[in-house]
Length: 184
Image (tube, rainbow, N blue to C red; front, side, top):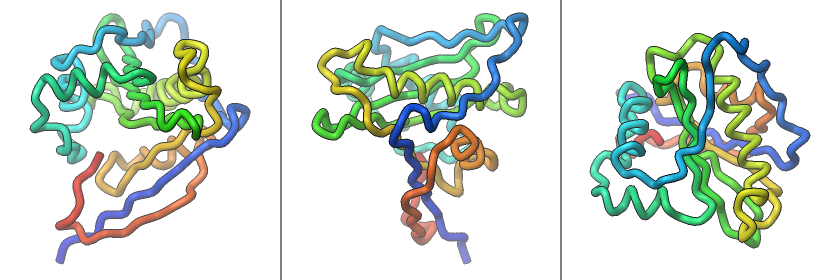
């Protein structure tokens, strides 16, 4: 019998709830840069490079036009972590309904070679802070009142713990049969 899929929904409702991870040492060569040009190829590369071993499948069949449309939406941002010039992970933010003032961390993760090095806490802290200050870069977006995300039992074993250490609180849990589930 298959193991059911558990999805956890987490949120922050104030920027002061963010418990940022320590900054990496300056000599670690870590930078986080916003990918300002919506590139379907780059978006797909990051998605598959991070998610291939944790069952991310929902975007695999997307044509380039759909990637471009999603990545080019107002209030949608892709922040990429690099280690000495090599892509190491990313945070994808999506502005929700302007009336809600919410920002979703749509996807977050590290390429397998960069996991377990302490980079995940830093990248999540950085991406969450960009969710809170989205209105500074996107005047059409109201001030953020909520940053939220979901993770599931197919994601990496440390994912939920990292979110909770950064200050995200659980607000819902859904359990589904494994056959009905895909991660992401």
